[in-house]
Length: 127
Image 1 (cartoon, rainbow, N blue to C red):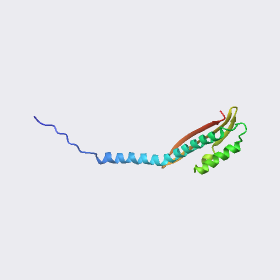
Image 2 (cartoon, helix red, strand yellow):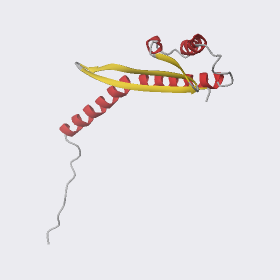
Image 3 (spheres, rainbow, N blue to C red):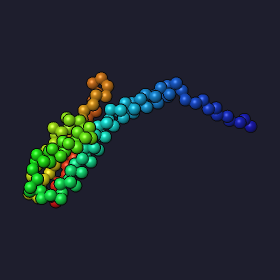
């Protein structure tokens, strides 16, 4: 009886190249996208902290300028991009203040391919 023997050959140069291209693409995505997500995490934390600081006050006596200066100061301390601050929207609702920072970040990935990341952050003060 003949013994069937299967030989293992390992990865071919083509499969190694394909694997390296996939890893390179993943690293490129990570390098371009992770800083934007880190900034958004900081923005969300700042809004949460401002809400905690201002919740103890009566929301009808809090001025927009007071809220804006508190958020601006926190953005500067945490080195958040000043471009994000222009998307800060403060509105007075019947039950308090609503603070939102809704923005998108567009990063060039390669050639004419861009990655667009959209972030929506909102807190309500005085509820």
